[in-house]
Amino acid sequence: MGKHFNLHKGEEEKHWQVSYIDLLTALLAAFVLLLGMSVPDQSKLDSFASSKNKNQVSLSSLSEELKQTIETSPGLKGQISVVMTEEGIELRFGSSLLFQPGEANMKLEGYDAIYRIGQILAYFVKARNAYLAVEGHTDDTRLKSKEKFLSNWELSSARATEVLHYLEDTVLIDHIRLSSTGFADSRPVSKEIDPVTGMYSDFARNENRRVVIRIYYSRVV
Image 1 (tube, rainbow, N blue to C red):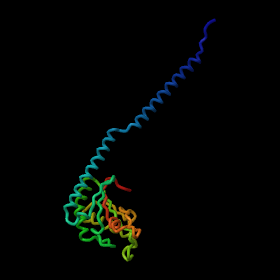
Image 2: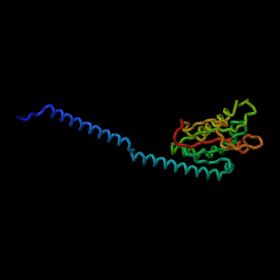
Image 3: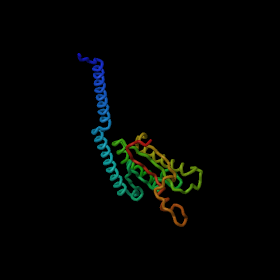
């Protein structure tokens, strides 16, 4: 008896093999695509790390220059502190250096202090495309009179704005690099309690009355 060949079966096997190869090709392409997506661009990572390190070095140098200026300037030593943070630098001015109690117009000593420090900041902001955020802070003592300000919110905001205007108008820092906010007594740096009164101690209140200038690189929205 002669042999019979199933032509249809051969065609089915051929189609099955082609489909299998297509499937493997598609899976391989997908794997390569996913692999490419999962591996970061090393050059971009190196660039980012280098930029971050340069910024940190610049901030460290600025911090040292500010400290030296404060230490060698009459009237500034002990009145301004320089604090390095994860975001940048915080300059903390005791409110008594800048303002009279309950007032938002700077004292002559305050103008002088902001001008001397501002000259350094102006150069840094322009050279490094940095930003300055001015913050006003009060203690928890309520205002004796509401003739000028309804509360510590208005007082702290007015003080921050006063410093900002001086930095913009006299020190000549570009206004797009500046911002100001009043925090009243909502962000105390000291929470020391007087055991007799059960309220913040005089030390804590003195520490909490301050104006802060933050120097940083990324705009906070």
